[in-house]
Length: 384
Image 1 (tube, one colour):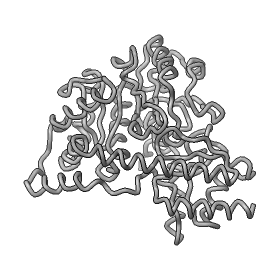
Image 2 (cartoon, one colour):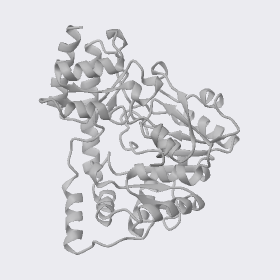
Image 3 (tube, rainbow, N blue to C red):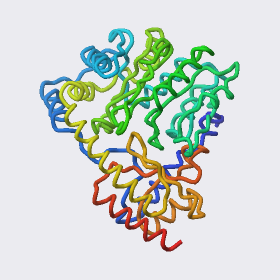
């Protein structure tokens, strides 16, 4: 047989997957590995979806998504951040943010175009760039600087081939957020070099001690930014796979063309559920975020008391402690902790070079499990 795709073949599988396979062989595991709320989707959202099925709403929708949902998305962004788009031409409803990300890269990249990606970052970013024919260029960030993206580090990596910068704040896996001033400097640099900006803001509602700064709302950003967002995190809707992109009409038109030929449209039931979330589930989301905040403080305090130095994350629901003092690599630490004490964490280096010497812990799990996980981690550390 002829060879398969060289690009896909040369892309390593997710470093997270091996640990999930290990978990399948073990009992009594406390998982801090999956970036998923432990809440179920609020009842009012599920009820709206069930009722839509009872009414027989089971058809395709517009390729762009239900207009009522697109209008609600725009209205919510205007309310929160003062930025809006034309819901008919500048919004595309997608199958999760993952599809929006993939579609966006394929819409803007030609073979060899470079995309600057601050890391550590979500594991899918670089492969999605590569699958679209582009070249991911990592921009390192450091714990000592709270994992903020420095404009100087970006400037050093801009070449004639640079096409775009990917921003993602609050960040998975570090929970880092960036200040308005810092993000404006990055936007100014994008304007100076005529670069696109992709801003993944899936964790925008999960900012605890500071405001979330939406990139398209910054001066000079909107006309060159593709905003990516969805419902998975804030509304506990991971399994519904519903997301969206907002951008200037020519970009959305390109993205829609890809979406049209691959997905056709997002599932109508998920779109109806998302509409209910935007219209009536704000209190549910606020209560979940407040609970994540309590868990964040408890868990990060516990990590530091164990001697695992951990900065207080400003957003998302991840702690990213340093494990350097143990003398173990990130992978050794995660594997031994799983096998010896049945606690699943993710090695930090799977998120990029800046994650070496760290592990990612998702604290979107029940308080009693977080407490038990800390006790087990303490027992593990005492044996090293």
